[in-house]
Every structure is written in C-alpha cells, then in structure tokens.
Image (cartoon, rainbow, N blue to C red):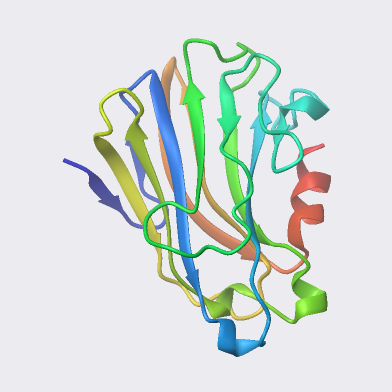
Length: 184
C-alpha cells in the first residue's frame, strides 16, 4: 500500500528498480497558451554537485552514462490522466559516485509565456516498483506557487546504504538555469 507523504517527510524505497512518475494538470485559460512542463534529474555526488555533465538527465539527455536512469521523454502538453513523464531508475546499475538524485520540474519558456506554477493544478510525484507496478509512495504538491517557474518535487538519496525519498516541494523563480548553476 502506498504512503502519501507530506512536505519534508521521508520514506525508504525498498525496491532496487523503481519508476518516478510525475503528473500535473494546467489551466490553459490563465495565459491562453499551452504549458510545457519538463522533468529533470540531477545525479549528485557527496559534494551536492553533478557527478558529471552527463549526469544531468532531461529532455535532451534521456539517460545516465551507466544506463541506470532513463527518462521517458518530453510530454509537451500534460494532457490525460496519470503520469505525464516517467523516469526509470535501476539502483543495481547506478554509479557508486551518485549519492543523491534531485527531481525538478520546470515550465519551459515560462517568462515569455507569462506562466508559473500557480497555474498548475493536481501536481504530484510518485514512486512505484518497476517490476510489480506497486506504488510505494506519493507526494501531492498542494502549495500555491504563484510566482515560481521551477519546483524541486523531491530527492532520492542514499543514507548508510539505504535509498530514501524526501518530499521537498520547494519552488523558485529562476527556472531550470538556477538549478543547473546550483548543481554544476
């Protein structure tokens, strides 16, 4: 049975292979334009920096060098129910240098389109066992991010040999570039 997390809550991930599903609905009438939300992952070492440039997983780099992290690709609309984007993670293959994975969702071209996460509804991150499809945990982002264009949904991290998930729910205005500069 899945655990529904609150912001700041942590939970063990007891599956060597799991999928991160991200979903959202957008209010297209807010700006009259389509929304394009993008999921990105930053695979970080002990120093909280990218292990290498190739450990930044996003729509232009869909897999990690060790093939342990594979992004499903860019969903340009967010239409439909369920996961809008998915990332498969295989901990049996992951580079030993990776100690943390930050999961970030950004709005593509947010400033030009005058869009922010205050116009996004029903956003969530969930983790499920890739082999059994059993949902392990879910975190529904219920804050109103009225000026933010990027949100760190959560992080997966290794503590004493155990992989855990923390529900972060932290937004900021500077978009993907801010996270890239933080983690490079």
